Image (cartoon, rainbow, N blue to C red; front, side, top):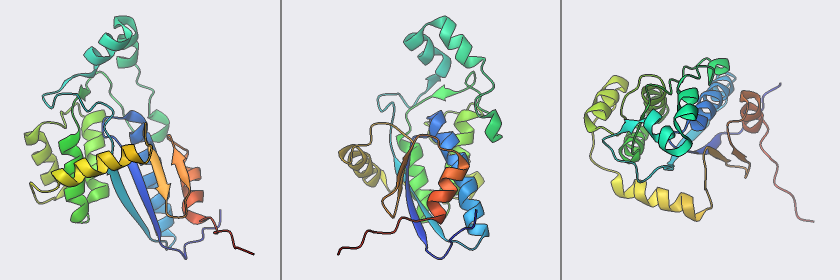
Amino acid sequence: MELNTRTPRTVEFVLDLICVHSYLAFTRFSRAVERYRDAGGSVDVVFRPFQIAPEAPATGRPLFEVHKAAFGEAQARAIAQDTSFGAEDGVRVDFERAIHTNTFEAHRLVAVAAAQGLGEAMTERLFRAYMTDGLNIGDPGTLARLAAEVGVEPSQDGAAAVRAELDRMHRVGVTSVPVLFFDDGTVLSGAQPEAVYLEALATPAVPATRG
């Protein structure tokens, strides 16, 4: 594909950090962004928060127990033992180790990191911490360590802004994630293939002219 990289792009990426489909979308989109940037393009990725389990406690709970309560033990064990999810994308998703938790503070950390130019790196580390490392990304100490790994300076700011963005996402009709809003009006839901994201970046829609 010949990439049109003349137009700087802005993409709003709505996600939750305990959503495996958001992780797959993030992985594929990040690779598309890298290819676009390598070709000389400019992309500003703006992360928007969404919580699929806003009632979850920050103390965390094994994901297996959450699945067991929702689907029964047999189905929960089948999910926990599934090692194929994400394999084609080169990522390891360990449902057996995952700690289901509240993601509000993790979203706030992403916002803090973004203000320091580290939003993409922080988002990747939080996804990997939850999906692969079995860490509780609702725990303040864990978040502090992950922030330090990425080089994010700690801050207590941003809680009100995250709440406002959560409310706004609901008002604009986001009911599930991932959703990507491109600056030309293109909207992509679900974990799309990398090629789809690259095409959306490289071929911005041309606004219709009025006759």
